[in-house]
Image (cartoon, rainbow, N blue to C red):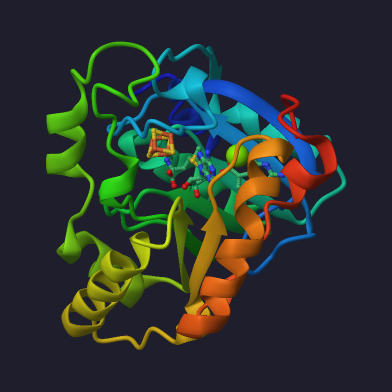
Length: 254
Ligand SMILES: C[S@@+](CC[C@H](N)C(=O)[O-])C[C@H]1O[C@@H](n2cnc3c(N)ncnc32)[C@H](O)[C@@H]1O
Ligand SMILES: Nc1nc2[nH]cc(C(=O)O)c2c(=O)[nH]1
Ligand code: SF4
Ligand SMILES: [Mg+2]
Protein backbone atom coordinates (compact mmCIF):
# COMPACT_ATOMS: atom_id res chain seq x y z
CA UNK A 1 0.00 0.00 0.00
CA UNK A 2 1.39 3.47 -0.87
CA UNK A 3 2.55 5.43 2.19
CA UNK A 4 0.23 8.35 1.32
CA UNK A 5 -2.82 6.22 0.53
CA UNK A 6 -5.04 8.04 3.03
CA UNK A 7 -3.74 11.54 2.32
CA UNK A 8 -6.72 12.37 0.05
CA UNK A 9 -6.40 14.63 -3.00
CA UNK A 10 -3.04 16.00 -1.82
CA UNK A 11 -1.30 12.76 -2.80
CA UNK A 12 -1.96 13.63 -6.42
CA UNK A 13 -1.15 17.32 -6.16
CA UNK A 14 2.06 16.89 -4.14
CA UNK A 15 3.42 14.53 -6.78
CA UNK A 16 2.57 16.79 -9.73
CA UNK A 17 4.05 20.08 -10.77
CA UNK A 18 4.01 22.62 -13.60
CA UNK A 19 6.60 25.03 -15.05
CA UNK A 20 5.28 28.44 -14.00
CA UNK A 21 6.50 31.62 -15.69
CA UNK A 22 4.39 34.00 -13.58
CA UNK A 23 1.39 34.04 -11.24
CA UNK A 24 -0.33 37.37 -10.61
CA UNK A 25 -3.56 39.21 -9.84
CA UNK A 26 -4.98 41.60 -12.43
CA UNK A 27 -8.11 42.42 -14.45
CA UNK A 28 -9.01 40.04 -17.25
CA UNK A 29 -7.91 42.21 -20.17
CA UNK A 30 -9.43 40.29 -23.08
CA UNK A 31 -12.67 38.72 -24.20
CA UNK A 32 -16.17 38.26 -22.75
CA UNK A 33 -14.95 38.62 -19.16
CA UNK A 34 -12.79 41.72 -19.75
CA UNK A 35 -12.64 43.85 -16.61
CA UNK A 36 -13.22 40.99 -14.12
CA UNK A 37 -10.66 40.74 -11.25
CA UNK A 38 -8.76 37.54 -11.95
CA UNK A 39 -5.73 35.52 -10.86
CA UNK A 40 -3.48 34.52 -13.77
CA UNK A 41 -1.39 31.34 -13.79
CA UNK A 42 1.06 31.41 -16.70
CA UNK A 43 2.65 28.08 -17.62
CA UNK A 44 5.83 27.94 -19.69
CA UNK A 45 6.32 26.05 -22.97
CA UNK A 46 4.45 26.20 -26.28
CA UNK A 47 3.98 24.03 -29.36
CA UNK A 48 3.75 27.11 -31.64
CA UNK A 49 5.96 30.18 -32.23
CA UNK A 50 3.88 33.21 -33.23
CA UNK A 51 6.25 35.99 -34.33
CA UNK A 52 4.22 38.50 -32.28
CA UNK A 53 4.01 36.42 -29.08
CA UNK A 54 3.67 38.83 -26.15
CA UNK A 55 4.86 36.07 -23.77
CA UNK A 56 8.31 35.55 -25.31
CA UNK A 57 9.65 33.88 -22.17
CA UNK A 58 7.10 31.06 -22.39
CA UNK A 59 7.60 30.30 -26.09
CA UNK A 60 10.76 31.55 -27.83
CA UNK A 61 12.89 31.50 -24.67
CA UNK A 62 11.00 29.63 -21.95
CA UNK A 63 11.87 30.47 -18.34
CA UNK A 64 10.05 29.27 -15.26
CA UNK A 65 10.08 27.91 -11.74
CA UNK A 66 8.71 24.42 -11.16
CA UNK A 67 5.76 24.63 -8.71
CA UNK A 68 3.66 21.81 -7.30
CA UNK A 69 -0.10 21.96 -7.91
CA UNK A 70 -0.55 22.46 -4.15
CA UNK A 71 1.80 25.48 -4.17
CA UNK A 72 0.00 26.98 -7.17
CA UNK A 73 -3.47 26.58 -5.62
CA UNK A 74 -2.23 28.02 -2.31
CA UNK A 75 -0.85 31.09 -4.05
CA UNK A 76 -4.07 31.53 -6.07
CA UNK A 77 -6.04 31.36 -2.80
CA UNK A 78 -3.93 34.17 -1.32
CA UNK A 79 -5.80 36.63 -3.61
CA UNK A 80 -9.42 37.67 -3.10
CA UNK A 81 -10.80 36.56 -6.48
CA UNK A 82 -13.36 34.11 -7.89
CA UNK A 83 -11.93 33.89 -11.39
CA UNK A 84 -8.72 32.16 -12.47
CA UNK A 85 -7.15 32.23 -15.92
CA UNK A 86 -4.74 29.45 -16.84
CA UNK A 87 -2.60 30.62 -19.73
CA UNK A 88 0.90 30.31 -21.13
CA UNK A 89 2.68 29.49 -23.29
CA UNK A 90 0.26 26.80 -24.26
CA UNK A 91 -1.20 25.48 -20.98
CA UNK A 92 -2.65 22.37 -22.62
CA UNK A 93 0.75 20.96 -23.66
CA UNK A 94 1.06 19.89 -20.00
CA UNK A 95 -0.91 16.88 -18.78
CA UNK A 96 -0.69 18.28 -15.24
CA UNK A 97 -2.81 21.28 -16.27
CA UNK A 98 -5.82 18.91 -16.00
CA UNK A 99 -5.04 18.31 -12.34
CA UNK A 100 -4.63 22.04 -11.66
CA UNK A 101 -7.99 22.79 -13.33
CA UNK A 102 -9.72 20.02 -11.35
CA UNK A 103 -8.34 21.39 -8.10
CA UNK A 104 -9.35 24.98 -8.93
CA UNK A 105 -12.83 23.84 -9.93
CA UNK A 106 -13.20 21.78 -6.71
CA UNK A 107 -12.22 24.90 -4.76
CA UNK A 108 -15.10 26.79 -6.42
CA UNK A 109 -13.22 28.96 -8.92
CA UNK A 110 -14.48 29.93 -12.36
CA UNK A 111 -11.77 28.75 -14.73
CA UNK A 112 -10.83 30.25 -18.08
CA UNK A 113 -8.19 28.55 -20.21
CA UNK A 114 -6.38 30.64 -22.79
CA UNK A 115 -5.36 28.23 -25.55
CA UNK A 116 -4.30 28.18 -29.19
CA UNK A 117 -6.85 25.38 -29.70
CA UNK A 118 -4.50 22.80 -31.22
CA UNK A 119 -4.54 20.35 -28.28
CA UNK A 120 -7.91 19.23 -26.90
CA UNK A 121 -8.18 18.09 -23.28
CA UNK A 122 -11.26 16.87 -21.42
CA UNK A 123 -11.00 18.79 -18.14
CA UNK A 124 -12.61 21.37 -15.82
CA UNK A 125 -12.92 24.45 -18.05
CA UNK A 126 -15.72 27.01 -17.56
CA UNK A 127 -14.66 29.19 -20.51
CA UNK A 128 -12.42 27.94 -23.30
CA UNK A 129 -10.83 31.11 -24.65
CA UNK A 130 -9.47 29.87 -27.94
CA UNK A 131 -7.17 31.94 -30.11
CA UNK A 132 -6.65 29.98 -33.34
CA UNK A 133 -3.53 31.13 -35.10
CA UNK A 134 -3.82 32.61 -38.59
CA UNK A 135 -1.27 32.46 -41.44
CA UNK A 136 -0.22 36.00 -40.46
CA UNK A 137 1.17 34.62 -37.16
CA UNK A 138 3.79 32.43 -38.86
CA UNK A 139 7.40 33.35 -38.02
CA UNK A 140 8.82 33.73 -41.52
CA UNK A 141 12.53 34.59 -41.83
CA UNK A 142 11.71 38.33 -42.04
CA UNK A 143 9.51 38.25 -38.92
CA UNK A 144 11.37 35.72 -36.77
CA UNK A 145 12.20 37.44 -33.43
CA UNK A 146 15.05 35.02 -32.74
CA UNK A 147 16.46 33.23 -35.80
CA UNK A 148 15.93 32.87 -39.53
CA UNK A 149 12.53 31.24 -39.84
CA UNK A 150 13.51 27.81 -38.47
CA UNK A 151 10.09 27.45 -36.81
CA UNK A 152 7.98 28.55 -39.79
CA UNK A 153 7.25 25.09 -41.21
CA UNK A 154 6.44 23.45 -37.87
CA UNK A 155 4.26 26.40 -36.84
CA UNK A 156 2.43 26.30 -40.17
CA UNK A 157 1.76 22.54 -39.90
CA UNK A 158 0.50 22.73 -36.34
CA UNK A 159 -1.41 25.97 -36.07
CA UNK A 160 -4.92 24.74 -37.10
CA UNK A 161 -6.66 21.47 -36.22
CA UNK A 162 -10.35 21.74 -37.13
CA UNK A 163 -11.29 18.55 -35.25
CA UNK A 164 -9.67 19.81 -32.05
CA UNK A 165 -11.38 23.20 -32.42
CA UNK A 166 -14.78 21.53 -32.97
CA UNK A 167 -14.25 19.37 -29.87
CA UNK A 168 -13.63 22.49 -27.75
CA UNK A 169 -16.78 24.10 -29.11
CA UNK A 170 -18.83 20.96 -28.38
CA UNK A 171 -17.39 20.48 -24.87
CA UNK A 172 -17.17 23.96 -23.32
CA UNK A 173 -18.53 27.47 -23.35
CA UNK A 174 -16.22 28.96 -25.95
CA UNK A 175 -14.97 32.20 -27.39
CA UNK A 176 -12.90 32.32 -30.59
CA UNK A 177 -10.49 35.24 -30.22
CA UNK A 178 -8.53 36.08 -33.36
CA UNK A 179 -5.44 38.30 -33.30
CA UNK A 180 -5.88 40.67 -36.25
CA UNK A 181 -2.76 42.14 -37.82
CA UNK A 182 -4.32 43.26 -41.09
CA UNK A 183 -7.58 43.48 -43.04
CA UNK A 184 -6.45 40.47 -45.10
CA UNK A 185 -6.86 38.25 -41.98
CA UNK A 186 -10.65 38.48 -42.26
CA UNK A 187 -10.95 36.18 -45.26
CA UNK A 188 -9.14 33.42 -43.35
CA UNK A 189 -11.26 34.06 -40.24
CA UNK A 190 -14.50 33.72 -42.27
CA UNK A 191 -13.31 30.44 -43.84
CA UNK A 192 -12.14 29.04 -40.50
CA UNK A 193 -15.33 29.93 -38.61
CA UNK A 194 -17.35 28.32 -41.36
CA UNK A 195 -15.26 25.11 -41.20
CA UNK A 196 -15.57 24.91 -37.40
CA UNK A 197 -19.34 25.48 -37.66
CA UNK A 198 -19.57 22.59 -40.12
CA UNK A 199 -17.49 20.28 -37.91
CA UNK A 200 -19.14 21.11 -34.55
CA UNK A 201 -22.61 20.23 -33.27
CA UNK A 202 -22.88 23.20 -30.89
CA UNK A 203 -23.67 26.60 -32.43
CA UNK A 204 -21.09 29.39 -32.74
CA UNK A 205 -22.78 32.78 -32.55
CA UNK A 206 -21.18 35.76 -34.30
CA UNK A 207 -20.82 37.28 -30.81
CA UNK A 208 -18.63 34.29 -29.81
CA UNK A 209 -16.16 35.38 -32.50
CA UNK A 210 -13.90 38.15 -31.24
CA UNK A 211 -11.46 40.33 -33.15
CA UNK A 212 -8.48 41.48 -31.06
CA UNK A 213 -5.96 44.02 -32.37
CA UNK A 214 -2.38 42.77 -32.50
CA UNK A 215 -0.23 44.75 -30.12
CA UNK A 216 1.92 43.94 -27.13
CA UNK A 217 2.44 47.67 -26.47
CA UNK A 218 0.23 50.77 -26.24
CA UNK A 219 2.02 52.28 -29.23
CA UNK A 220 1.25 49.29 -31.42
CA UNK A 221 -2.39 49.17 -30.24
CA UNK A 222 -2.72 52.88 -31.03
CA UNK A 223 -1.85 51.96 -34.62
CA UNK A 224 -4.20 48.95 -34.88
CA UNK A 225 -7.26 49.19 -32.65
CA UNK A 226 -9.45 51.57 -34.63
CA UNK A 227 -9.05 49.59 -37.86
CA UNK A 228 -9.89 46.32 -36.08
CA UNK A 229 -12.94 47.92 -34.41
CA UNK A 230 -14.18 48.98 -37.86
CA UNK A 231 -13.64 45.44 -39.19
CA UNK A 232 -15.72 44.05 -36.30
CA UNK A 233 -18.57 46.37 -37.27
CA UNK A 234 -18.23 45.52 -40.96
CA UNK A 235 -18.27 41.74 -40.44
CA UNK A 236 -20.66 41.61 -37.47
CA UNK A 237 -18.14 40.04 -35.07
CA UNK A 238 -17.33 41.22 -31.55
CA UNK A 239 -14.37 43.50 -30.79
CA UNK A 240 -12.24 42.84 -27.75
CA UNK A 241 -9.89 45.39 -26.25
CA UNK A 242 -6.59 44.57 -24.58
CA UNK A 243 -7.50 46.41 -21.40
CA UNK A 244 -4.30 45.47 -19.55
CA UNK A 245 -2.16 46.93 -22.34
CA UNK A 246 -4.26 50.12 -22.37
CA UNK A 247 -3.85 50.38 -18.58
CA UNK A 248 -0.32 49.11 -17.94
CA UNK A 249 1.37 48.83 -21.33
CA UNK A 250 3.72 45.81 -21.41
CA UNK A 251 4.60 45.68 -17.71
CA UNK A 252 5.17 42.11 -16.44
CA UNK A 253 2.62 40.74 -13.98
CA UNK A 254 -0.32 42.61 -15.53
C1 LIG B 1 0.34 34.44 -24.85
S1 LIG B 1 -1.12 33.63 -25.40
C2 LIG B 1 -1.16 32.17 -24.35
C3 LIG B 1 -2.29 31.23 -24.65
C4 LIG B 1 -2.20 30.45 -25.96
N1 LIG B 1 -0.88 30.02 -26.26
C5 LIG B 1 -2.77 31.26 -27.11
O1 LIG B 1 -2.01 31.74 -27.96
O2 LIG B 1 -3.99 31.43 -27.13
C6 LIG B 1 -2.45 34.59 -24.64
C7 LIG B 1 -3.26 35.45 -25.59
O3 LIG B 1 -2.45 36.52 -26.06
C8 LIG B 1 -2.68 36.68 -27.45
N2 LIG B 1 -1.52 37.39 -28.00
C9 LIG B 1 -0.21 37.01 -27.95
N3 LIG B 1 0.58 37.95 -28.50
C10 LIG B 1 -0.25 38.95 -28.89
C11 LIG B 1 -0.03 40.22 -29.53
N4 LIG B 1 1.19 40.64 -29.88
N5 LIG B 1 -1.10 40.99 -29.76
C12 LIG B 1 -2.36 40.57 -29.43
N6 LIG B 1 -2.61 39.41 -28.83
C13 LIG B 1 -1.58 38.61 -28.58
C14 LIG B 1 -2.88 35.25 -27.92
O4 LIG B 1 -3.50 35.17 -29.19
C15 LIG B 1 -3.78 34.72 -26.83
O5 LIG B 1 -5.12 35.07 -27.05
N1 LIG C 1 -4.63 41.28 -17.74
C1 LIG C 1 -4.40 40.28 -18.58
N2 LIG C 1 -5.45 39.70 -19.21
C2 LIG C 1 -5.18 38.63 -20.01
N3 LIG C 1 -6.06 37.85 -20.66
C3 LIG C 1 -5.39 36.86 -21.29
C4 LIG C 1 -4.03 37.00 -21.03
C5 LIG C 1 -3.03 36.01 -21.45
O1 LIG C 1 -1.84 36.32 -21.53
O2 LIG C 1 -3.44 34.88 -21.72
C6 LIG C 1 -3.88 38.14 -20.23
C7 LIG C 1 -2.79 38.82 -19.60
O3 LIG C 1 -1.59 38.54 -19.79
N4 LIG C 1 -3.11 39.87 -18.78
S1 SF4 D 1 0.47 30.08 -29.33
FE1 SF4 D 1 0.27 31.59 -27.67
S2 SF4 D 1 2.06 31.31 -26.32
FE2 SF4 D 1 2.42 30.13 -28.21
S3 SF4 D 1 3.67 31.51 -29.42
FE3 SF4 D 1 1.53 31.87 -30.04
S4 SF4 D 1 0.78 33.52 -28.70
FE4 SF4 D 1 2.70 32.76 -27.82
MG1 LIG E 1 -1.15 38.25 -22.10
